[in-house]
Length: 127
Length: 163
Image (cartoon, rainbow over all chains, first blue to last red):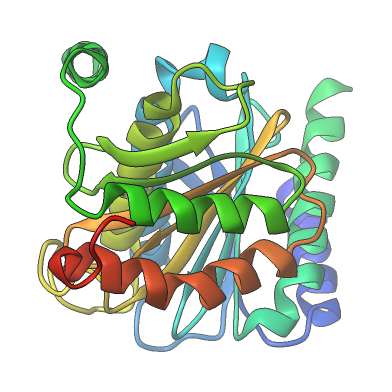
């Protein structure tokens, strides 16, 4: 998937998810933000992606030695705060998708959108 | 990373070797049992120490042999989530008022769904469900409903003598 296709996909998903704040796509292997959209003006996109890249790294470390008990892969992490709900999806070995939205009501569409994007990336990777 | 994993493994072995009980342990367990009865998919419920992930008080349905594996994992995820959200929302630095931002954290693997929530300054409540979670709203409602009772027991154990 090229950057243009990715951008279109993110824009379409972002339009479909009510209350969404940000949608980001990372390259986990290179620790690189591939593409992101954010309505939040308080923190630049690079700052947002850094926060979640560090989180993903710590998540991976925490999971590394407990895979046999907990499950070999983490499908999704949701973080619920008073200000926003975050959905982190690491479906693909290579990619990670992060979405942020306002309030619990947006959770289902957010999780669905993030999953769609992660699957699309995985399919593009596999051929 | 290897050091961290080894340290964590050592701690988990240590946790099994030195069981400790909270003064209100029995009363807390009773509450955990009531919560489990309301959540058929529940396999572990536990109150753990934030810093170490030590399961201070727990119940299981018998399918999970090492609840500390889950509590240690969620302690780390919760801490990482707090740090990420603090940075994201430009809030207090990690360690300061850690309960301020996060309401709870949910992790879903192909085997389990785990919910973690801080209930006091240094303790958290963990709920592990068989995956997929029966209903996303239900475990959250369960935590909401029982949290005040557990919090009371944890903070003021002397007020609730063992029955």
